Length: 447
Image 1: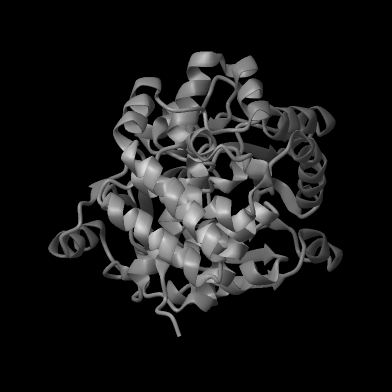
Image 2: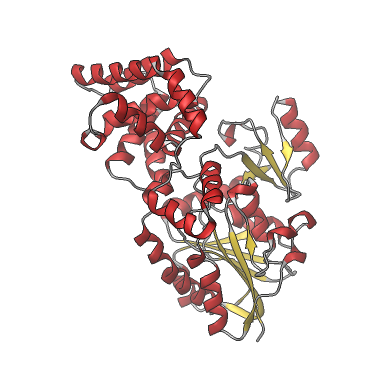
């Protein structure tokens, strides 16, 4: 039996994704769950996959010029091997070129490929390796391609201009820094800083959120960090942490709802912010996500503070629960604000996908409103940069609901973060600020 191999796992992930582009996390979970890799090699496999998808256009341009074979006619596994090998040559300077070629070809061969095809991949990668100085020079001179689909680039250029669009694409093509929110009930900033410094990690405070730290040089799994098993922190981008602050004021004895909980990042943050006697309910319909929501809350010692509902928000509403004082509604969206963390999104999304989002978002918003007490607060959140999912949804909602207002929420944020509230009174962040791209609107029911 062959030894578990990071490149073999990366190849299989890229093959499956290339054969039928789909959301990456379930593919990653399935392949890595079977691969038997240790933490270091799991992290390497994931890094290889993500960087390959970030730089897909750069890679394909050079592969097409070298192989003289139409990429569209290549087998998915063959194209995946060429992309993976070249990605290491160009974007992983700590991997020697010989290892990038030989290890990738070896993994390709172990997957049962015919000798002639192994020879084709080997020969193509060796040619690319010999030409590496020229490829690197060309990449440096041009800054690389947008590495985003033309429809999305054109869309952003129309709205943002060419210069900002290029800057946004380049920000999305960088490896994001890991940010964490510490658990104030289990540790302190000083303790976490000290333990991570003692472990030889570079750690720094985030720009806006007081309980947020980031590890600019760390590329491993968060499970390897001191304090993970003890529930001292959870991984969460600063923008997501700040959006939770908009649900304030949280009152003792209040009832609160995370209406689209996902993996539980915002649920965990809200549970830590709640005063004594307050209740929090989290709703998540997808079984895989619901299981991870439970696991994450348990690790942080928050399982007893949150009531988890396995089902849709509409299912919860059908049960006519007592209304909630505050609702966080992080709706499903196009995800164009988190492309740097989820590089597959740029290739998976279509204009039709984007057009289908606002009706779903409006339906969830209408459902959530039915569960809110008079005087209650609803925070509408997306990780999208697109106005159709953000300002346009909220503007239409406010026009149709005169019993709601959207007062300026700047006072609810740390002083350094008040500039994230735009002239429209909405919360905006961007990869250009070193954060995920989030939108949030704080809606108050006046009657």
